[in-house]
Image (cartoon, rainbow, N blue to C red; front, side, top):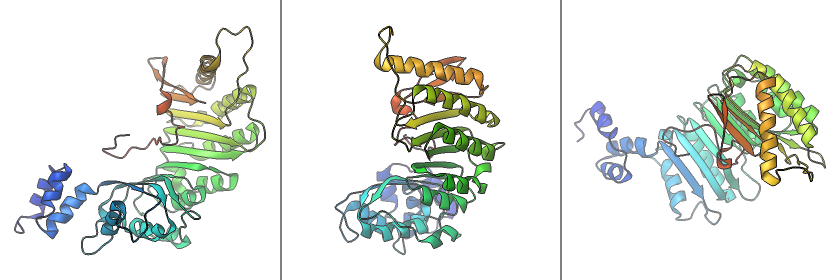
Length: 339
């Protein structure tokens, strides 16, 4: 077996995808192990339980240690990595070791990872290190400071989702980097205290992204004030946002959300009530946005808890489970992903 040329072994493993077949082939030799690991570790989804420790015999922890253990370390073979769960603090060093070795990683999805006892700490020096995630293309994370610091120093990132509300200073840092001219998918939560502030943020964002390849934009405005946005304020916000986004000529998907959700009053004369009325009014607002703002290139639009695909000039409803605002949705999909 060791006499076979590299090209032939690589060709053989291109046809091995089932875990059982890969596992058997990896037992042939150390050389074959690494070829099998290339396929088996291409896309990794790690869920860590709150009761595990770095010294436990938990399957996930043992696998994580094997990724960084010589001579069969295979962390560099991972292309797409998802981290989730509630991990204790002593797991952090192991996670950082893995991330430090995933030099060919293309996408990192870690928004559902929670480090107990204070959260995950990333040493400041990793952001300037040329060997830390140098080939990252897509990031889905909770922490706004971490996301901005990483994206600023990585030249290939084109898909970003940040779940934590971002203030004006962080937004300007993000938009001041080279990311804006590479961004294709952008999903942000922005902290604002009024619809006027939200409109101003959109203006800054659109100006920075103008002329770039952005094709999908999802914005969630977290209103830092006692009362929710009224329906009239929300209508005004959508109208103004539409006007400012006209410069994004490649935009195909758009989602605008405020938290809390704007209440919709119901009168005795209304024929529709409840969710039916909310959907009707939101649809009418979406139709006005498409008409008045000249965003004719849009193929999908989502407002509040409703969304539509635009097919042959008609609006076809999108199930709520598929809306971009969902915390477990991510526009970026790794090759072979089942999302």
